[in-house]
Image (cartoon, rainbow, N blue to C red; front, side, top):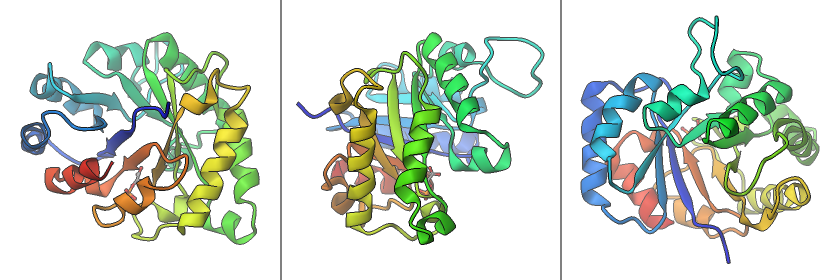
Length: 245
Ligand code: PEP
C-alpha cells in the first residue's frame, strides 16, 4: 500500500502572531483533509499555533534542530524542545540552511539522529544546484546527499525525504515531470537497504509548488506529497494544494 500523502508547509522566516489567522482559516476549511497536513512555522510560533490546531488534523514541525540534546549553544533549539511545544516533525538540511549555515551531510545526519531520539520525524532535504544540473550531476549529487544525510536507525515512520532542487526554490521554476520522476525513482531505489521498508518512506517534491501545478506533480510516480514554501503562507493557496493531494 502507498504511504499516506503529506502536504508540508515551510513558513521559513515569515509570519507573526497575526498570521495565526491563516491557521484558523486552514483548520476551518479542511477539518478532515484527505492527506496529512503539516505546518512548520518559525519556532516562536509553535506554541501559540499548537493551541489553534490542538485535537485537529494539522501537525506542527520545526525548521531545524541542534544535534545535541542541550547545552551552551546560543540561539539553537533542541529536538526535545520542539517536541515539548507540540512539534512532531522537523525539517533538516534545507538548502537555505546548507547555504547560510554551512550544514554538511554529516551535520544533517547528526541532527536527524537527534530528532529521532526525541521522537520527531525528520524531513531530510536534498537537491542539486542549477550548475550541478547543467553538468548532469543531479543523480550523483542526490545519491551522495542521501547516503550522507540519513542516520542509522532511520525508518519509514521517522524519516521523510524532500527533493528540492535549489534552483526551483522560490523562483517559480520547476523541473519537468520527467526530471522529478527520475530523481524520485532514484531516491526510492537508493533508500532500499538504508531505511527499513523503503516503499513506505514518503518522498516529497519541493520547489515552487503552487495551486496550479500541484495536481500534475502529485500524479507523478513516487511523489508522496510536497514541501511548500511561499504557497503555504496563505490558507487559500495551501488549501488548494492540500485538496490536490
Ligand atoms: C521551500 O523552501 O522548501 C520551498 C519549496 O519554497 P517554495 O515553495 O517557495 O519554492
